[in-house]
Image 1 (cartoon, helix red, strand yellow):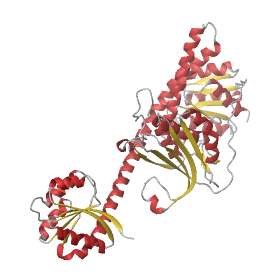
Image 2 (cartoon, one colour):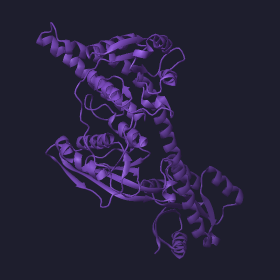
Image 3 (cartoon, helix red, strand yellow):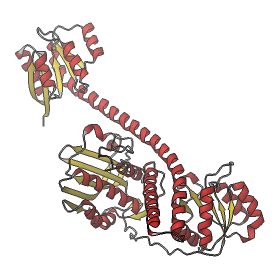
Image 4 (cartoon, helix red, strand yellow):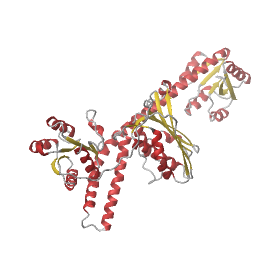
Length: 515
């Protein structure tokens, strides 16, 4: 089959233009062509963005240099080939330096086919290189913002721990509070919980949120959340679910996969204010080495693909490159935080996956999420996590926390649960207290990052060198990865992410102490 080719030729001779077109046909092309002689005609045809431009060098009413200048001004990646019978080598080199792709003499038109093929290869190479550079710049920008988000999240979590902890303790006591005061405190608590959600989204975006990875089937995740998504979408949007057969399992966090689906569904709902259709589908996909080379984030191999398609308003091209940036939103004030897609991006990055987006105005948007596939087998059943009762105890806890307000609130919460508490404001102070009360301490609750050059991790190593079975729970406003590879921290088992609620503290303590 011949290759279709949309040709614009700048030529004052109709016969010469026809010879050029016939030569293209002989070279295996199927040209659709337009011949122009003036600048106005040329500009009109340029708006249609032809596949290739051929220009005679000597024209009575228009110049090749002007035609080339107009093309370069529009920054269009269209090959520009000079076809002339009079151009000399010196002038040809000048044109090439100015931006022309190549030149062909009219008495050697047999060169036209190879010249055109090489020109398209060069354009494709430049386009791919530019796309790779843009994706690399975007990845670097996202990484920088992520580091900033992680640092802000730590400080903000410490503040929220004081606000939330103090409010919950007052509400738990409840003495002397009238209904108005109680309602105000509940609003403070609600606001702090929402702020905590935003911080977790920041940590997720910056790929610093803890993962609870399991071998799961995305088909089960999609099926379990479908009913909830339909309620979120409302009655004017229909939800279609098409799960692929024999879907390979993936290593993923169920809660985060549900958050990905929820965020994308909300985004789709907002893009379809008058109603529409949202389709979720799953499939097994193979990515070749050739495909992987086109994107620095992509790896070759077997993947499970989750596709989310809506027929909403679409995303303008100028916004597509920014949609994963945190706080970037085109919604009205109060309608969105700009963290939804940034959170999705962070979650997929944490799962060693990648995603693509394609959108057309009025027609809709398609997100494709690729997660590394595991060897085929039955995924573990997805079971809901049930919350234990708020049990207390009588054991002795060594509390190590450099923030005085957090230390005071935690000590009060532990005392109300029945525990005896020994407080220390630093690792050095904790070591001194350990020497005095070593035989009575049952558990150490320590912040990870503390001043003085000795972290909570260092403290735990020192204490466990004396009693290897010592139970330790770590806390931090940072994510668990601050511990590094030597310590494996898991939320609710040996780690509490600030800000945590009293019932989370109580549950984790009993889980660790009763092991």
